[in-house]
Image (cartoon, rainbow, N blue to C red; front, side):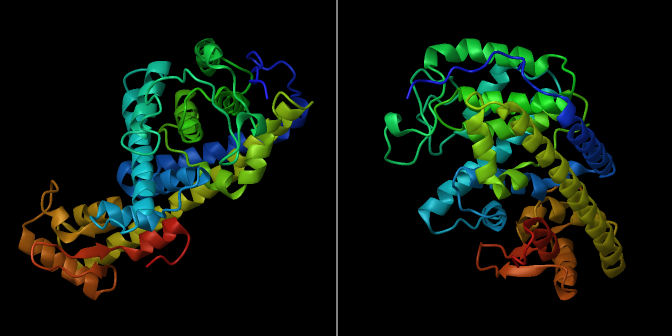
Length: 370
C-alpha cells in the first residue's frame, strides 16, 4: 500500500444541510453540560474520578485492560501483581497527567505544536512506546494493521514521514481558524490528526485528549473537561470504520462528521447526568457526615475522599486544612461505622489501612466494583 495523501484543509466537499439538525442537537447538549459543569463548586476535586475514568476508557480503545478501580487502588499504593496490568495502569496514569498538564498550560498560552509534543512526551513517559521518538514527530513510515502483518497487508498507511511537518503546520492553522461551526471543525481536527498519525505511537490517545482542549479554546466549555471516550469505546468499530473511509469514499466526510456530532450529543448528555449524580451524592454525603461528626472538618474530609475515593488513611494527615492524626482516625471510624466508607485492607505495622468510598467509585464505574 502507498502512503495516504491527506486532503487539504479546510475540507471542501462537506454538505451542510443534512448536518444542521445534528449540529443543533450537539451544541445544545454541550451547552447544558457546560451549565452542569459550571455548577460544580470544585471540579478538580469532585470530578477527579471522571477524569481518571476518561483516561481508562481512552486507553482501553488502544487495548489496555485496567479498570478505574485498578487505577484508584494503585493511587492508594496497591499495585497489581500482574506485570501487564501494571503497565496498563502506568499508561492510564500518564494519560491523566497529560490531561492535567494541558489544562495548566492552556491557562497561560494557546494550544500549539510545541505543547502537543510536550503532551506526547508525557503520554509515553516510561511506558510502552517510550523509545519511539517520544515528544518528536515520526521520521519513519508507520502503518496500522493487525499484529504480525506487513505494510503490504496494512489496514491503513499514514502519510509519508517527510509530509508530516507541513501537514501538521497546516493542521495547526486549521485548529485555530474560524469556521462555520466549531463542532464540525472539531470533527475534522480530530480526524485529520488521526489520518496524519504524526507520531510513532500514542496517536489515538493524544487525538482524544485534543477534544476537550479544542472545546475549551473555542469557548464552548469554560473548563477543558469533556469525556468522549466512553462513546467511542462503545462504538469502536463504527469509529474506526468512519475514519478509515475518509478520502477513499464519496460522502465519507459527511458520514464521519455526522457520527462525531452524534457522539458529542450523546456523551454530553451522559456527562451532564453523571456530573449531576456526583453533585447529588456529594450533597447527600455532606449532610450525612456533618450530622454524624458535628465537626468543622467534615467538608474538608469529604473533599479529600472525593478526590481520592480509594485511599490510605495516613494520606490525609499531610493534607492542608485537616485536623490532627487522632481526630482523623476518629472521624474515619465514624464514617466506617455508618457504612459510608468500607475497609479495603487492614493496616499492619507501618502499612496504613486502605479505605474506599464505594458509592462514588460504583457511580463512576457504572457497576458495583465494591
